[in-house]
Image (cartoon, rainbow, N blue to C red):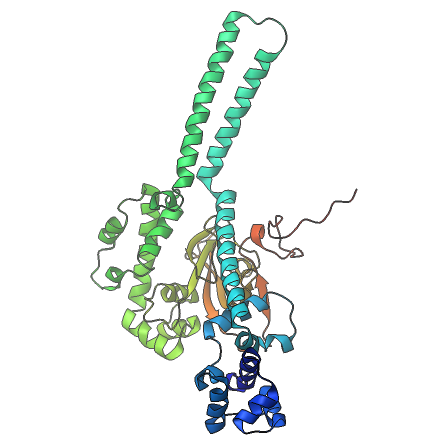
Length: 438
């Protein structure tokens, strides 16, 4: 419902709050009660002198009767409603609800924001608990040590005499295992306490690479110049990271430089001004492959792009080798994503472009268009298998075409609420388990 048609609802709400009958307000405004009834039910538009008279009779400013609820509040309420089954008639009355009950509307909006924050926390923690190599190794070490202590203690607790020499051995083993368990526990506790620090983010080479790109906003001005020394840039950017991460970084920025040389920044800005975030327009403009166009778009500075774009790259095994997430379309930090993403489906049909509008299950209000293609990583050679690499560009999509097919996807199976998904590979913690039959 348009904003200017809700003035009547606000007049009725203000009249009730003031304790006035409809006939009393109509008399003060010098109109008939029947006409006021039509106004309050949004069947007659109101403005000018009559609006001023009614506002004066209610003791409020005219603007308070014509101004709708804040855009951000309405967007948050619509986002909350989009995740449940609601009739269209109820959905379009969200502004009327916000106008009549601003307190309740603000409470619901605040709750929705808290739910989104908790969902992101669950996603991050689940991803970490499931795939974090350091955490998995520490827990394995702790369980192995506890098992060894229990085995030695059970032998000492058995009835019968044990030779003193064996008793000393078992006691020494228990002591040494206990000390190792204490050290492992302290190390794990320190690691978890530093979860938000920079040091804890660099526990794998891929994480270190992601950290470098995120630190510079995925754009490196030094690599945009024609006389750049890639080795010098790699050395400077790789300070403080591991040797394996430096190897990954040099490979990534070498590819970045090749894309920048083929698609200069100034010409990219001109192309974006005309065609927006369209990878097909980039590929046609510069005569390059689609994957290169996707990478170049993802590395452009934010002041050039009309809106931020995301990018995910995986190798032929499905392992993510590059990730640039978006606020409303996160990418798993560790492990694989949703098997329904075009990124993975493109691997099954190389060189075919997949374009699809997606909604992540936990973020039903946000839509993104995914462009995906799987291309060879190098030239074909006689007698050798061709290796493929898949790219997926992620572009925010406005809700303008409701007739277009929308694919509902998740982040990972562990935190996806769709219980009947055919691509599910493990149970979800977001769905209540079905009761067991006795």
